[in-house]
Amino acid sequence: MATTSFMAITMMAMAMAAVSVGASDNNRVHSPCSDTTVARSDGFTFAIAFAAKNSFLYNSALQLSPCDSRLRLSSSNSQIALFRPKVDEISLLTVNSSSFKPDSYGYMVAFAGRKYAARSVPTFVANSSYTVTSFTLVLEFQKGRLQNLYWKRDGCSKCSGKTNFVCLNNQHCAIKTSSCKNHGSTVDCSLGIQLAFSGTDKHLSALNSWYEVEKLRQYSLYGLYSNLKDSLTGQYNKIF
Ligand SMILES: *[C@@H]1O[C@H](CO)[C@@H](O)[C@H](O)[C@H]1NC(C)=O
Ligand SMILES: *[C@@H]1O[C@H](CO)[C@@H](O)[C@H](O)[C@H]1NC(C)=O
Image (cartoon, rainbow, N blue to C red; front, side, top):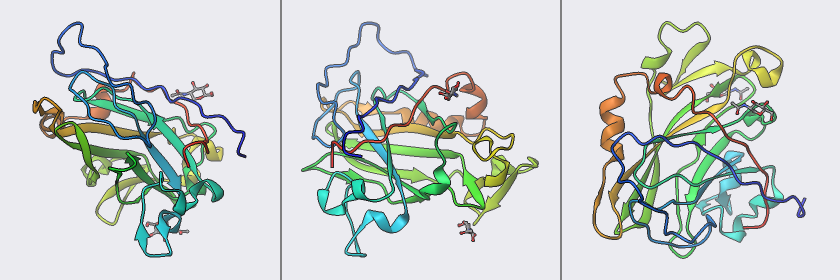
């Protein structure tokens, strides 16, 4: 286990707004468990951990960052995906499900930072009955430091009229896990995570991509991004 090396996750990003040509990534921090501050043209590394909901709790009560070794996530059944989107660009992250079965984990938490650790609440991904494939994650920065990560509820409007989908708890469109390709059926149940940035960068420039997502939400974002899937999952233990 401990020797499993850590695979970088590739992701595709698409700039919705005009991005200044030549803007470069000056953020040298590539570990999700280190602290950094970013500017708009930088890349930013964060990770998503997949595990059972109670694996994210310390002493059954305290929510800790997966970077906190007290959680001992690496000794539970868990999986990590690492991403490095560009700050303030709308990105769709995907987790390729061909060899990854989210129902064997259950929930996911997005996180980054150590001394200034930030993490999302655990959000339901899949169990043996249902798999949720579409998520929106907002990364909120203040003066370039990550303050908060939160899941925006997508609601169920996207499931209406689609035979493969059911609406779970009025919050998420879900697919029957038994219909997924990774369970021998036909539906591609790869996870898609729409990413947006809000707040300010280290030069106090406003990060606006969240507003773009809000405006675009009335259209099908997944149609827009349908050619941008490219990602892997990797298991890793080094950061814990
Ligand atoms: C799977 O999750 C759904 C939604 O949270 C829940 O209603 C259902 O009972 C769960 N099924 C199993 C087998 O745990
Ligand atoms: C997922 O991974 C499989 C096997 O590595 C590959 O054949 C497939 O093209 C990938 N799919 C996507 C959407 O990246």
